[in-house]
Image 1: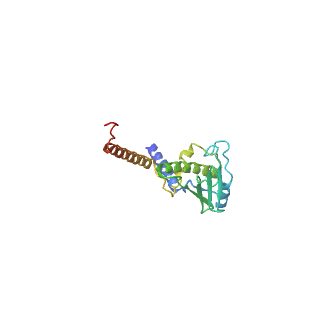
Image 2 (image 1 turned 135 degrees about the vertical axis):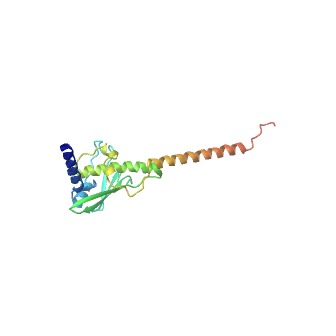
Image 3 (image 1 turned 90 degrees about the horizontal axis):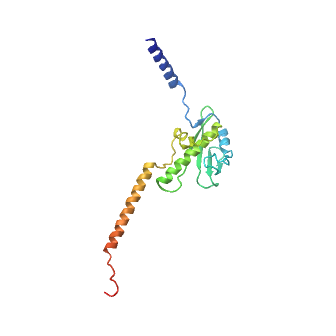
Length: 191
């Protein structure tokens, strides 16, 4: 009986602490927006091959206050993401990230999601002062952030698109075979 009372008391204490403790979303950092902007504008060191794109450089550019754009490969390549910086009460900063699709279709959307995951991990590592972690870049860090405003599609969209392309190709092949069968056959010479 004593064990049960102690167990219930401990559970109530832990539950109460959990419910009453302030929750901070993972994309809110304990620095002022100006400091966050300055941190995100620092050159990204990727020469050792441990960055989000191995040895490809990440080029920061910004509007001076609330947006930082990280381009990969070449400045202005369009293969980057934009980090949106917003003040939060208590002198903290909220970051959100948006990445445009490069190309058309679900496959382009899936590669954009992977690129965004890597960039979110890089932003989180930059803001917390830790090294970039390729394992976390596979989505563990990004899964806790808000979703992108841009719709990128899913693996199911890619599958559906592939099935539609295959069906269209089969339809075209059947039409070509039918046209070939209906075409008059040339007579051999001398007939």
